[in-house]
Length: 285
Ligand SMILES: [Ca+2]
Image (cartoon, helix red, strand yellow):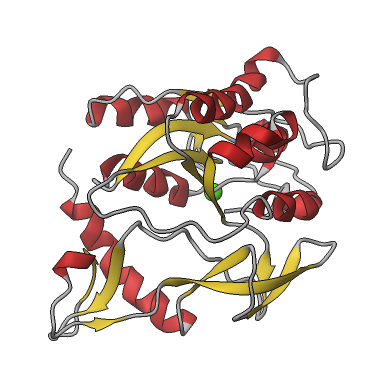
């Protein structure tokens, strides 16, 4: 995932997080998690992580995927992408990933609605982007429609920039307060360096089996001989810098913020390199 619009949106992101008066309780194991997937998925592909994230949203039985919102940025639609702060990328042009979403709807026999969000950056943290072209309004409207029509609060995973969510919030903040259960942001950067944390796979555990293999398994499938690797949301305090970086620390005090704690990053990376392919191979549409 690229930093892109995060740099200008820090205050909005954390304003959104503040919507939650208290951490939401985990959904019962028998109940699917209603979910909106906001992704900077392009076609042709740009970052294969977005394709794999979306496959997981379709394939995991714990997830009820309600909508896909394509968060694409104008600079990446050019033959040579020229987003400020990133090296020129001559492998374009790219467009919103409607084709891979259509392929997944076919493969998984689903009809998940999909729409594109605005391509331009917000003019201010309060921007509702009502002046964006009609085609690009549809992603924002799809978020609001999905929240509005859901009988239960919905979770949003955000693997692109937070722009579509921020704009939707700016338009209907009350709806978000009533219908957004949890917003999972892959955003910003924390010390040391740029370590990016991906959203958890709901209700699953990353384990090292007795024979040394790493696997992502349902909680009920954890064996007594398994070693559980850290992979939990922890209450934290956050300090955001103007350039989009942030620092955080665990807290036992009341807080609206949580962060994924995965222990030693290198150990986690080694485990996921083995466990993630095994998880994807297990998917059977
Ligand atoms: Ca991404």
